[in-house]
Length: 136
Ligand code: CMP
Image (cartoon, rainbow, N blue to C red; front, top):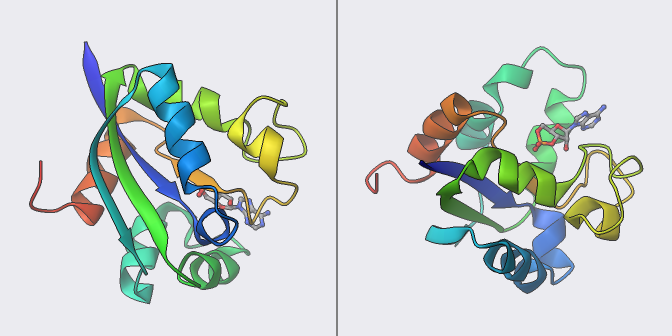
């Protein structure tokens, strides 16, 4: 059964010229890009997207970072797309993510870890609605 997930190539990924690398991995895996947009998030949208982290000590830092420059928002579709993309991305902490994954190959810091992927189909549905309200 096909599923959707919301992926962000975060401002560090865009700044470092990794848009093509991330999309190439996604396509090589067989996940389909069904929506894509380059934009700079406003603070309100960033807070809505990361609402579940609002009580965390790093929330302010997270919002500052995700609004610090253009990002690429993508909707991917495929069988178990949520899990499939999280496997491509690697562990949240890039020091612990395996080489061969996006974070394992490109990142060292937890706050600047190149990509975001929804953590469940329920989160995906919520996040897709935030980024592409009229599309799905
Ligand atoms: P992401 O998948 O976008 O979802 C929440 C983000 O919070 C996560 O990736 C990390 O980039 C970030 N994050 C998690 N833990 C920390 C931390 N201790 N300090 C700063 N950022 C963090």
